[in-house]
Image 1 (spheres, rainbow, N blue to C red):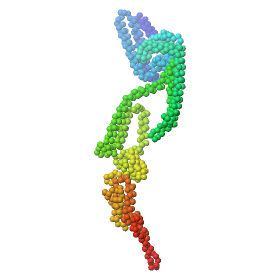
Image 2 (cartoon, rainbow, N blue to C red; image 1 turned 135 degrees about the vertical axis):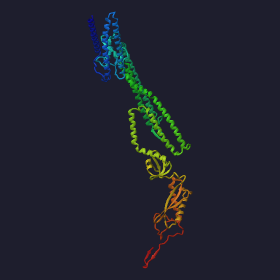
Image 3 (cartoon, one colour; image 1 turned 60 degrees about the vertical axis):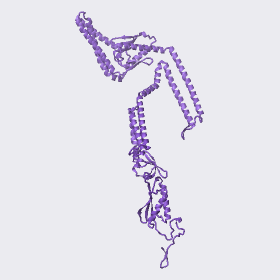
Image 4 (cartoon, rainbow, N blue to C red; image 1 turned 90 degrees about the vertical axis):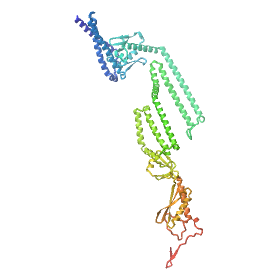
Amino acid sequence: MYALHAHMTRKFINTLVFTALLLSSRAAFAQDSSQAGNDSLNAVILQGYRQRLADIEQQRIADSISKAELQLQFNSLKTTDNLKKEELQKQLDSLNKNEARRIAQKKAQIDSMRQTAKCYAVVGPLKDTLFYIYNRLGSFSAADRATAVSQRIKVLAENFGYSSDSLKLAPSESTVDLVYGQTIIISLSENDALWNNSSKEALARSYRKEVNDVVIRYKKETGIITLTKEIGLAVLVLVVIGLLIVYTGRLFRWTAVRIQEQEGKLVKGIRIRNYTLFDAKREVQALLTLNTIVKWIVFALAIYITLPILFGIFPWTKNFADTLFGYILNPLKKIVLAFWHYLPNLITIAVIIFVFRYVLRGIHFLKTEIEHGNLHIPGFYQDWANPTYQIIRVLVFAFMVVVIFPYLPGSNSPVFQGVSVFLGFLFTFGSAGSLSNVIAGLILTYMRLFKLGDRVKIGEVTGDVIEKSLLVTRIRTIKNEIISIPNSTVMNSHTINYSSDAPDKGLIIHTTVTIGYDVPWRDMHGALIEAANRTGLLMKEPGPFVLQTSLDDFYVSYQINAYTREAQKQAIIYSDLHQNIQDVCNEKGIEIMSPHYRAERDGNTSTIPPDYLPKDYEAPGFNIKLNDNGQKKEG
C-alpha cells in the first residue's frame, strides 16, 4: 500500500513539473518575437535584480513541489490519523509562510529598482500610451513584450468583427492571460503584478478594460460618419485660416499706407536733445519694417496654431498636435515653474537690495553732513568726504554682489563659474596699469597734495587743477592747454602747490636782475622795492625785500621778493613787476645791461630811453690824443 502511495506521489510530482514547464513555454511563445533587440542599458540595470529574482523563483518552485506532495499526503490520510494530519498541516502552514515571505522579498527587490529600471510603453492604435511593461517573461525582454503587445492590440482594433465579450481572462499555473479567441494578447506574471502593486487577476482585469476601451474608441473615431465630419471640420478650419490670412494681409497693407501718409505730420522724427536719432523719412522706414515683421509673425503664429487644430481633428495625427503644442507649452511651463521655484530667492535678493540701499543712504547722509561742515570728525578733512564715500560705496556694492551671488540662477553651474573665472582673469591682467593709477589716486586724495582749482607744478607742467579722478589728474595751463597726467606719474614726480598757503601766508613772487658794480647797491635795493610796491597784485604787508644772491665777475645779482595772495595770476604779476622794474631803473638813471657789458662811454649815447634823460642831455664826444709824430690816436 505504501509503495503504491509513493508511486502515485512521484507520478503527481512529475506531472506537476511537466505542467509548469508547459505553461512557461506557452507564456513565452505567446509573445511576438519579430523584434528581438534587447535594451542593453535596461539589461545592465536589472542584471543583479534578475539574479536575485531567479533565486527566489527557484525557491518558489521547490516550495510548490513540496506543498503539492504534502497536500497529496494530507488528502490520502484516514480520518483517524489526527496526529499525522496535524504534522502535515504544520508543514503546509510553514510553506505558506515561506510563500508570503518570498513574495515580500520579491516586492522589496522590485521597489528598490523602481527609480533606475527602464519601462516600455504599450501603445494603442491611436498612438496613445495604455500601460507600461517593466520586466521580461521567459526569453522575451520588456521591450520585445511591449512591441508585441502593441502590435496585437493594433490587429485587434482592425478586426471588423470585434466583440468585447470575446476578450477574456484565462488563468494558468503561473500567469493570467488576456486572450481574444485563440490569440493571447498578453500574459501577466507575478512579477508584472508586483511592479504594478496589484495582483495578477486585478491587473489583468484592468488591462482588459483599457484594451477594450481603446479598441471601441478607435472603431468609433475611424467610422465613415466620423471621418466625414472630421474632413468637413478640417475644410472649415482651412477656410477660416485662409480668410484670416487674407484679411490680416489687407490690414497690414492698410497700416503701411497710413504710416506713409503720416510722414511729416504725426511722424516727425525722433530727437534726443540736440541729436536727431531718426528724421521723418527714416522713422517711416523703420515703422514700415516693423509693420512687415509683425505681419509675418502673425502669419506664422496663425499657421502654427492651425496645424495642431487640423492634426487634432483626425485620430491618427492627434499625437502631432500634442507635439506641436508641446513645443510652445512645455517651454512656457518650464519658465513658469522655474520662476515659481525661483521666487523665494528673488524675494531674498529684493530684501538684500532694499537693506543695502538704505545703508548707502545712511552713508550718503554722513558724507553730506561732513562736506557741509555740520559734522566734524577729528583728523578727517571735509575734502575727504566724497572720495571716502565713493570707496565705501564700491565696497558696499561688492559685498552686496557677494551676498546675492549664491541666489542667482545658475550660480552653481560650471558654465557660470567658468565665465566668472574668465572675467576675473581678464580684469586682473587687463587692468594692471589701471590699478596702479587707482591706488595712486587714492593715496593722492588722502595725502591732500592739491585740490581742485589749485595752481600747481607737476614735473615740468604748471597750471590749475581742473579734475581729479581715480585714474588721471587734469591740468589747465595758462595757455588753456588741457594736460592729463596719470596718477602714478604724479606720485613719481615732485609736486609744487602754489595755492595751498597763498590765501593765509601769501606766495612769494621773486625775480632776479643783474646790475653792474658801478651802481650803488642801496640805490638798486630802493629801485626794486619801489617797483614791487607799484605792482598792484603784490601785498604791501608784509613788504617786499631784496636779496643779493651772488657777486659775479661783471655784475651783482639782485633778487626782488614780494608777497601775493593771487597764486593763479603769477604770469600777469611777473609781467607787471618786470615792467615796473624797467620804469623805476630808467627813472633813477640805472642802466640794465644784463648779463654782461663793458663800460665804454666815449661817443656812445646812454641806453636809458630819451623820455627819462634830462632835456639838455648830449652824448659825450670821443677823446682823441696825438702822439709825438702827430698821428691821431683814439682813446
